Length: 189
Image (tube, rainbow, N blue to C red; front, top):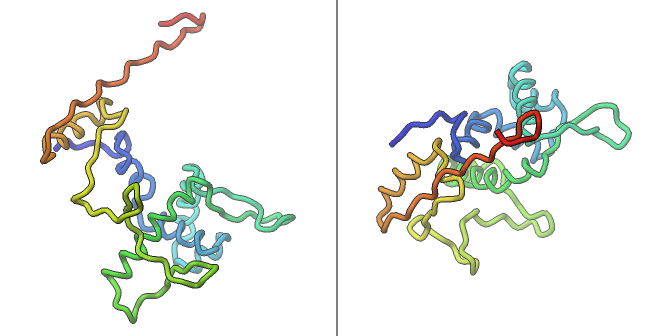
C-alpha cells in the first residue's frame, strides 16, 4: 500500500491525526468540554509543562478548534472555548471515553460517566446508525470514492483500497482539472 506523508495527505484521517494525533491535544479538548478555561487550570489538571501547554493551546487555536474569549462578560482575562469545529469532536471524544471504559477499566474503576443533564441518564454507547436509526456493524458498511479521490496525493491509496474490496471495484474519478489563474493583467495564464 502506498505511503503518504500525513502533512501533505488528502486523507481526512491522516489530516485529522496530524492535527490531533497526540495525547495532549485530546486531553486539552477533554478539559474544555468539562469546563476548564484557564491556562493555570489546564496545567494543574494535566501536569503538563507550561511551554508544551502554551504550544498545544496555540496550535488548537490556530487550527480553529479552540478560541479565546473573555472569561466573564466584562473580564479582562481570556479563557479557552470550543469553536463549532471543536464541538464537532464531541462524538469522537465520547466514543473514545466509552471505548476506554469498556476495554481498559473494570465496572468498579470507571472514573466518569457521561449523563444527560436533564434526566441524569447515562448515555448509551456511541454507535453508527443507518438511515432508519438502526445500529450498523462494520460488515454492513462500505465506502465510495469521493470527489477528491482522483487527487494525485490520494489516488494511489484509493486504487489500493478498491483492489482490496470484496465486491466489484468502481471507477475512480479523474483528478480535478486546474482552474486557470489570471495573471497580473487579469488574463488566464
